[in-house]
Length: 249
Ligand SMILES: N[C@@H](CCC(=O)N[C@@H](CS)C(=O)NCC(=O)O)C(=O)O
Image 1 (cartoon, protein in one colour):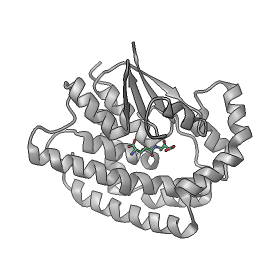
Image 2 (tube, rainbow, N blue to C red):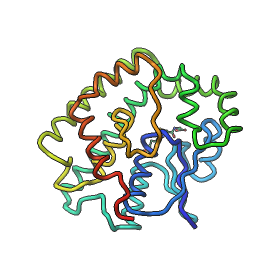
Image 3 (cartoon, rainbow, N blue to C red):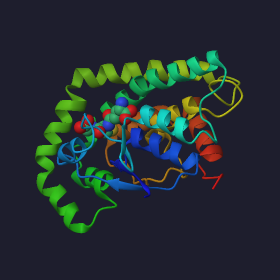
Image 4 (cartoon, protein in one colour):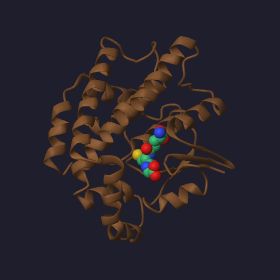
């Protein structure tokens, strides 16, 4: 049976898992699930409520890093993890730390003002779904908006703090990629794949399977302007150009 990936289409953690599957040339089907109700859907399979979740026959893997670990073990060709122990450690350290420092902070900053644009958020979560599900989303959006704000935005002060943490992590990444093509060693690894996925919303590369739409909000556009010429944003675009194409299939 074809593997299934339960996802929110626009989620950068889901992109990370999708990219790993594509990179290895593994056939899979994405299943966009309805936010809110996703708690019931996901809990049927996994202990936590978060996506991505990979379903492979009777095996269930939750979490983007765990999905890569699983794929590396089960489908070792087109490896994403260095063999050298030191490089491997460096790679996992960057991935785990930047999943939080870039991934969580950018989500917080983007949701901050974009939650005020229901059409935009509906598109992000439901664009592959039938019209009726899009209508249901619209109906429940006020409740969902409150929940997303409580869980991911929290307060003006916390968003300011997230922006500063994001800026520091970007500076650190800039140092790491200076004069180099890849973060660890001389080959594309899961560290590059993870960081590029976490920053996909910032660079909006055309190779990303989510069809981008215009950012409707001025505060968020300012955030984009701040980073549009950043060396790390440029590097993300290059990594996507070189490695997001499903070259091996
Ligand atoms: N560490 C997790 C984070 C995944 C995550 O935060 N997923 C969010 C979407 S971006 C989610 O599913 N949120 C809803 C929930 O946790 O119930 C991973 O790498 O997969």
